[in-house]
Length: 335
Image (cartoon, rainbow, N blue to C red; front, side, top):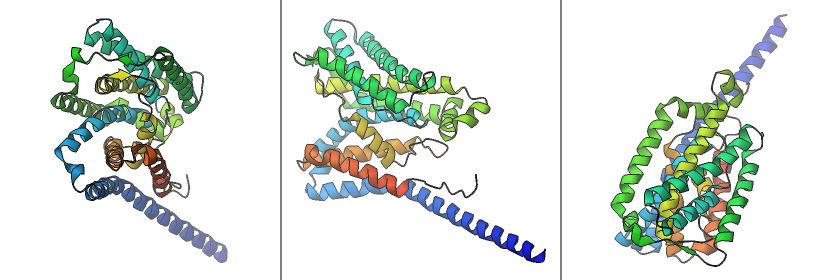
C-alpha cells in the first residue's frame, strides 16, 4: 500500500510539473503575441525609411498612408466582431465591391448621397446575412457559405461593368477625400466599436461564443441572434468603407476590393488576434495588424514591388506568424 501511494504521489507530481511547464509556455507565447505587432510596425517603418532614403516618412507619403489605412481600419473594426466568433469570411472584398457598385449607380441616377449610402449599406448587410443564415440555420461552415456569397457578388459586379467601368460622380461629394473628414469618421467608428466590443453584453457574448458555443448556449447566450448581429455590424462597416473606397478610386470595376480578404486575414493574424476568437481577443489587436499590412503594402509599392511580391510576402507572413503564435495546447494538460 505504501509503495502504491508513493507511485501515485510521484505521478501527481510529474503531472503537476508538466502542467506548470505548459502554463509557462502558454504565457510566453501570449506575451510574444502581444509584443510582435508593435515590434513589426517599428521594424517595417525603419526598414522602408532606410530603403527609400527618407521618402517613406515624407508628408506626401504619410498622407497616402492615411488614405490607405482609413478604409482598411473601418473594415477591420467590423471584422473584429466577426472573427471573435471564429468565423472566417472570404466574401468581404466582393461584398464591398457590390456595395460600391450600388452606391455609384444610384448616385449617377441623381439620388441624394445619404440615400445611396443607406442603400449600399443595406446591400452589404443583406449579403452578410446570407452567410449568417447559412451558418445559423443550414449549419453550413461560414467559410464555405462566404465563398458562395463571394462568387455571387463577383458575378454581379463583373456583369454590370462588363462594358466598362462605372464612374463615380466625384463632383457631387468632393469632401469624401478630405483628410479631416476621414479622421473624424475614423475616430467615431473606433470609439463606438471599442465601447460596444469591450463594455456591452453583445461584445462579451461574442468572445464567449468564440471560446465555446456549446457552453455559451447553456449559459443563456442567444448564439444565433448574436451571430447575426456580428454579421450585420460587418455589413455596416463594409458599406461605409465602400463609399470612401469608390470615392477615392473614382470608378467601380471587377478589381474593387480584390485584396481585401487577404489583407484582413493577415491583419488579424499579425495583430495577435486569435483566429478562433475567445477570451483572448482584443479590440486593438486587428487595428495594429492592419497598420502593419498597410505599411508593408505602401513600402513595397515605393520599392516598385507591390504587385510582384506583395501577395507572396503577406501569405508568407501569415504562415510564419501562425506557426510562431498558434496556441496548440492552450497551457492545459487536463480539460
